[in-house]
Image (cartoon, rainbow, N blue to C red; front, side, top):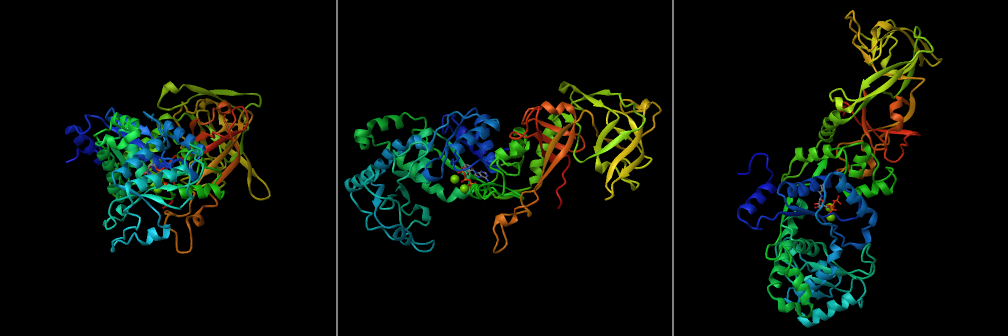
Length: 578
Ligand code: ATP
Ligand code: MG
Ligand code: MG
């Protein structure tokens, strides 16, 4: 039985270590295709693969699975590296599947020489028709019994660029009657005259996913090849590819003039220790989509400002929104690794975030929707400087000085003309505490012709300096404030849900997920007033506006000493309306 708290992958690794299957080696890989930015689902896979390597003093590769030349771009490669590093992981090697094109090609020739692969000249339609169905076996291709010589010759012509796209493919010779359709002579190589982001025009044939993936694992000496459940059906094919290679490596003579390829393969740590594939449940989160195809669409159609739009469920989006790597790792740990698909509440991710930011975000005062508070009995030329801790529970954060003067900004929502009993903030005749400063009592207010409050007046009690009273009288409300003479203007961006429903992946008939994009998911407050200490804040810094929420200085638009732009990362409490 698995140890309590241990996931099934680690249970398998323990058993493999017990039986000495890999001589104690543990080597995983995270294999993204560089055709988009990573999302929070990928974070689950990253934490699992890199976490396993860390826990077993093993290794983990970041491997770019780049066999599809038309969809892949360098921008994606760079962003993936940045995201994995940001999450706090470092790879032991960073290969590309395209690094193996030459080796894979000779392995394909090896398969041909072993009688395990053939060149098929059927059209794509014929291949599809002859594949059969779940109930009916497929039909053998008329080209299935080509001789090794003929196959080698044709495959070399494919490589040499002598054939146009689609003229033929290389297929594994397995079993057209296999119950698993994937094993019905799968495509191993196709012709594609397309430039590749790394190999340029060096190749006009490209290996297929299953062939590439298993063999790349074998070439890298991977022990545990962890992927998501949708690849369960591919596992027999994965096994076939790897086993065929293992068998071929027992016949060095088959390499012929390519004996150096044999030498290289034979020297691999994975030689005679083949990798195995294990599948775990992919992550789904409420209220968003986790599919690169859909995320690309959101970007291309302009529903968001880019891959790192703070509303995007991409790692770069979460980073820009102000999420910390620790909170995402914690989330991945808490959701665990299981074999059944499920959907996790976004609220859980936010809870992990709040826990982390509560511990590490410095506190500041900022007024989002300002209204003037004038303290009538406070001298015009006086300025108090209050020293406030940056963190209420951690002295090591230090302090900052906050100036106080006769005219302040307070939050419009902190005042009511006719407050109900339970409203402990400001109202006519009521006394409240201004955070760390003084008690003030409201003496009056003014409105414009629309009934909008334009200013509030109050008197302060000089005996309450620091925000407490010797006479022990209590005030229930504490308001945050910013000195009007010293405050700095800032733009605050509040983010709501990107979609208007819990599951945009299951649209009503006639709709697509895009129809559920929330047009009101971004609220820009462009006249916020914040304390002067924030003026020089570095982009990307996390902090809390007391009573308001967690924020971070926007990585793109915030300029220290210039325009201040803060993203709301999360409210202080869960306000998700159910
Ligand atoms: P998408 O379906 O979003 O396009 P993908 O699976 O095609 O993603 P890859 O770049 O191939 O993207 O993914 C790299 C690794 O991340 C794979 O091992 C894949 O199984 C894993 N992965 C992708 N999405 C998720 C998810 N939602 N939860 C957990 N792991 C995931
Ligand atoms: Mg993929
Ligand atoms: Mg996928």
